[in-house]
Each structure stands twice: as C-alpha cells, then as structure tokens.
Length: 125
Image 1 (cartoon, rainbow, N blue to C red):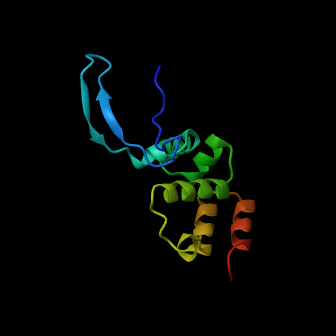
Image 2: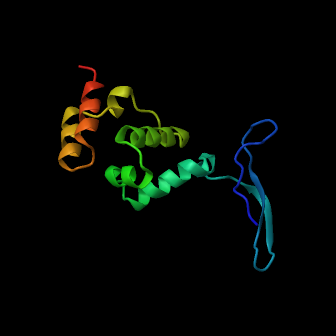
Image 3: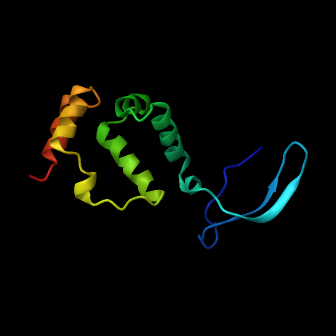
C-alpha cells in the first residue's frame, strides 16, 4: 500500500524534504536531499480539481458540469490553487473579469445568464 507524500512536518509544520528514493521493482535505493514539487502542497480535492481542469482543457463550463459547481466557485478554486503554487501576484483589478469577458463567456456558453448577471453586479463601477 502507498500513501500520498506529506509536504509539511506533522510536528512542527515546516516543509519536509525527501531523503530516500526506492525502486519497488528491483529494490534499488538512492539517498540524498530531494525537493518536493509545489503540487505536493495541494490537497487531494485540489489535485482532483486540477486534473478535471486539465482534462477539460481549461473549459470552465465543462469543469462546472464535471464537478457540479458554479463559475464563481471554479474561479475561486483556480485562484486558491494559483496562490498555493506561488503565482498570486496580481491585483484585484487584474484578476477581475471585464464586462467584455463576461459577454464573451456568455456567448460561448461558458456561463449562464444568471452567472453573467452576478459577475456584472459584483463589478466595481
């Protein structure tokens, strides 16, 4: 049985590193200091979301259907994962959706009319 890799120490919560790799076939083992991928910081739920997002080729409407969640929820999960991976350097204005983007998403059936209305209501000005 195998378990997911822990990324933080359960005692002090500092970042863990890998000391040993082993082949399950020939039992070869390699010891050194190895770093973990940024993706190990994601929860299983977040990794599932990333997988669905990639399989859907970034089509938010397909992600909504596959996971049974709304456009704002998809966007929120994306922003959360982007932040965890260390790429959350945009300002609120840069991450907000413009009116023309909302119209394009509506025309492409990526969001519902109700979701478009909500996005436009939440815009500042």
